Image (cartoon, rainbow, N blue to C red):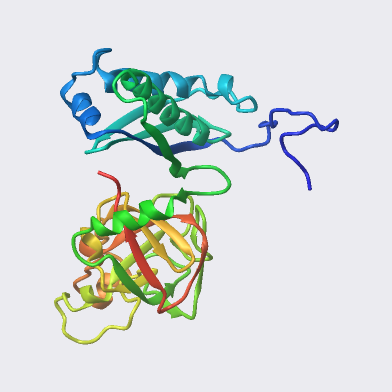
Length: 314
């Protein structure tokens, strides 16, 4: 086994980042400090003798994120683009959430976690005179984006986002559709390989842009002006779905479809009046009710695969 943080002599080293690809990186972490109900009420009302607890904790978290490489010995010194913390004062606890971002060759998970730890310690320091029995815990990474390993989402956080949805939160893939030319009807296929950062392998719309994959609900087929049945794929969608009102999903929504994870990037599009689809079907619903996604985790999708919706954090 090769240890990335050890040199040939078995001593610690910083990983060489020269060959790593730079990209946008973002990490969100969370932790909680538990205390007496009276302590939390004093924090909420600003009655802690040392001052504004949350204001001090905010600055402590930001400062710690910037100094992570000094505190965690083998971390890189990363130029951060943004650090923010939020606080949720509950009946017997304060929940701290940090968000850190950068553009570079390595992630900011440690910076986000360090910010949370420092903020929690600062809350303890501000309040220890009235509540020495406070307990710090539940410190974890909620999510991270960017880098070779792709996105990560803490499982419980994903489940909580499901409960905030208005309307159905699960759907089904009816058909996977493919064509090699833009503006043409797509043909259903038995399965599709969706590549991270590309889209459906070999499809005309695949590529490094924000509209890698197109989706349209089977329910939208019934809304077109003509009444005769149309074969699936007539509106050039890569994925035909059932059970979700796709065009009501906000940009930033994550869709777990089969093995893939996709992010909604656009709702609807401009109708190209000279395309083959419009001449064949007349009233094209794709510009009104179709959506487009970016593939953030690649994999295979089959007809019948489930679709799970994870709404963006408000």
